[in-house]
Image 1 (cartoon, rainbow, N blue to C red):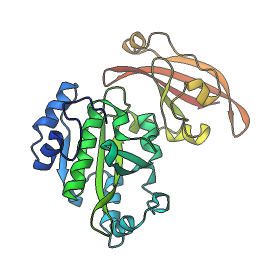
Image 2: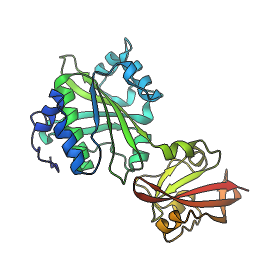
Image 3: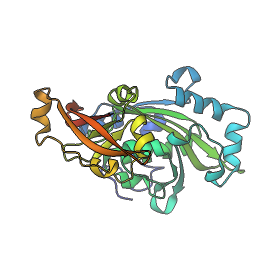
Image 4: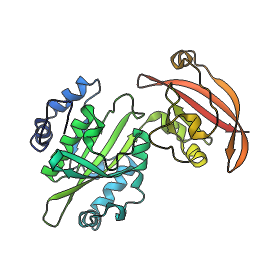
Length: 293
């Protein structure tokens, strides 16, 4: 396994894992500071009162139920696990000892949509950078401690999320050994939260037009975005022109209003497009609101 930090080799014995086990997070803080982000929060064996997000709290209640964790621990086929309504945010991983890594057996659709890639069948180290170093070490620590852990971290600026909140549980086999890890992984994003409340489709793109986010109304109309992410015009199957200078457009608080044709329920519909630009975590994005006429 290749890592970007100083700790390479067996994650069960690496220095970063040991600091997580000892709850001395200075090395973790230094790792994130070197990459320009704040230190993550790590809390071992959190109580239900430590969990504020409804999805995370609901998942925790399920796992703490009399048959919840036991059911997960005894089943080898992750596709049969009863995790509704948490499935869109659930990850299941297995250790890959020969590679000193962890492979995703399940990767929730909401996680993939925000991250921009479906990691099912891939390994944590493939994420790259300090984030994969941190999570390989944290998953290894979960195996050793055999305890749940809550982590909250700031992703790299290119990810369309402010923070990721992750609650991780070890799954034990009949011998009491950890054979899988289950986690619920929920992004927090104050910009997308506002867009979700809009009754009309709203899309967020990078400066090059690559789709980063589609609100619930857009997903109902155009379907789930295909991964890896494509251009906004391909997603909507209509021609959408964006201003050439996103930064200048954002600073001028510009608003473009245009008309285009699209399909809604197999019927051609006129759409009014309201295009604006904004800064989010130091990067420029376009926001396209689509109002059917």
